[in-house]
Structures are given as structure tokens and as C-alpha cells.
Image (tube, rainbow, N blue to C red; front, side, top):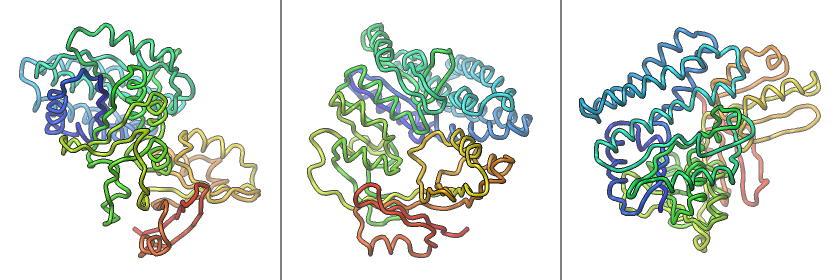
Length: 421
């Protein structure tokens, strides 16, 4: 058995969904198919939830447009006989999502986020399932919240492996001969009966959990890139494909901030010795990047990661007790791995974090934060591993360097840049 994980870029439109269907159809081994929300659905749903905090009627109108866009895609993919069943399922999901918008001002944001934004994965897998049925590809669609059980805070839940593996193995045992299993990434279910999510970009992690519990022979993560590159070719012309990486190398690169693989993905695969391939859905015959215990015996080229859309947050500790401000920021920034600390002393803390609409809303409107916190947005964070001084200087051309920090990893430098507007 293999696990195939398809991200939002692979199912962004009708052409992409047809392409995914072809990749699934030609695979001879049985599959667990893990699908993310289509395209930029997660971003759109986040924005709708943000709007609902202040302008509920606008949020409801935006949700209508969101579901209509999915219906339009379905009309391109399904016959007149198949379409009504999908539209009924989509309407049910819409009806289930509406109460969360009406409660946007009354519930903790992290809780609301998981209940509402998870709509994207549930909707995408229903559409993919309908298309697979239209192609007579045998499969069973299951709700991942019934299979991945979790605990811990909303937006960064921790899977309960023993319970989850039992449920996944039971689901696989109940499949009919020749059936694949189709599930959502990113989402899980907690003991209180609510949806939790595994962290932003957590669908890769979901796929790794399914692979580990199923004892899969391989996990393939299908992306819009040929594999893992040492840099984004959009801003670094000398980017090269990394054919092979060890688990440790892949984990280090992902922890530095590379978006291709979620860092949590590696650990359950390494524990079971399951190889991971990062492959391109645009070039499905290419091998991509292999991550395994055997790979990674040659020196790596410099690793260059640029993270645009960053916010520099300055917390004044000397003027005000920081506890309240820190608590608010901790709740707004659940993923600590994305936080870079450039300064932390008795007078001031300076963090660099990704821009999020909810975070900017708090910085602008929270009375506590406005007294204790200042910020600068629209910045870029450059992370370089193994780069010589000449390379770093070249990468910083035409930008103002605001902060530089070496480490804590050996040979790694982080540079905060302002590139202007």
C-alpha cells in the first residue's frame, strides 16, 4: 500500500482535479489518498472568518461566493446525473459552517478557526470523491476526524497515535477488494467531539500519520515543484533540485522554514523507515526528491529560504508588565516554529512572525497590545544555511537589513529585510 497526498495547488481547478484523477487511476497498488483544501481555499476561509468578527453580512456574502466557486468547478467535472448529489453534500457542509460565523465574536478564535476553516478539506474531498466515482475508480471516502484522534490546543493538536492507528487499521480492513481510502488532510477529531487541526500546512503530517499507521511502502507528496530545491527559483536563479535527502537533512531544512514539507511529517516516517517522495503533479513520471534513511551521503549546496510577509513585533517590557501582551500574542501565534526571536531581554522582546489577518487585527485594535507593542509589517525573512558571505551579500542587494542573527543551528544565518513597497 502507498499513500498519495495532494495539496491545494494540485486541485486548484478542474484541470488539476482531472490530472490528480489520472495519477490515481494509473497506480497499480492500493492507495490511501490524502487531500487538502482546493487552491487557496484555506486562505479564503481564514479571510471570511476575519471579516465575520466585524461585518457578518459581508462574511456571509463571501461564503456564498466561496461555495459558488466550488459549484462552478463541479459543473465542469460532473455530469448532469452526478452533479446534484455533490451539490446536496456541499449545501449540507455550508449549512454546518454557518453557525460558526454567527458565533465569531462569542467564541475563542482558535476554536472557531478549526470548526470553520476545516470546511475546505471536507468540501474538496467530496468533490474529488464525486470525480473518482465518475471515473469508476473504486474508493471509500471517510471523515479523517473519525480516524485521526487528537488532544491539545486548537490549531496545533497532537495526534493520539495508538487510538488513531487502531481506527485507521479498522477502516482499511473494512474496505472492499480493490478499494482505495480517501481522507482529508489537516483535520482531526478530539474527545469533546469537535474538529481540531494539526497546524498550518499540516496535511503532509496527516499523510505521514496515515502512512505510519498503515505500514505503507511509500508516501508520495504531490506538489507544483519538481521536488525539494535548495531555494525558490523565483528569487534565486541558481536553485537546483535535491535528488536525495536523509530524514535528518529533510527535517533540518523543513524546520528552517522551507514550505515544501511540514517538519512534523518526517518523524513518523523515520520511526517506521517509510520513504517519502516529493513529486510534481505536472511531471508525474519524474522521480522527484527521495527522502529516506539511506539517502543524503553527499554535501548539500547552500540552502536559501525567503519568507515574505513577515511582521516585526516589539514588546516593551520596561514600561509595562508584559504578561497580558505575551498571552494575547501566544494565542494568536500557535506555531512557535515560525517565530524568530531577534531580541529577548529585560527591556524588550523582538519577534518576527508571519503576517496573519487575525494577528494584524489584534495589533491594531487590542487596547493591551496598542499600549505595549509596536510592529512593522511587510518585511522579508531570509534564512541561509551553508552560504558564503558573497552569496549573502548578493541576496541582500536592494534591501535594507534590519536584523541579522547567526544560529542557533550551525552554519545558519537569519536576516530580516525591508524591501520597500
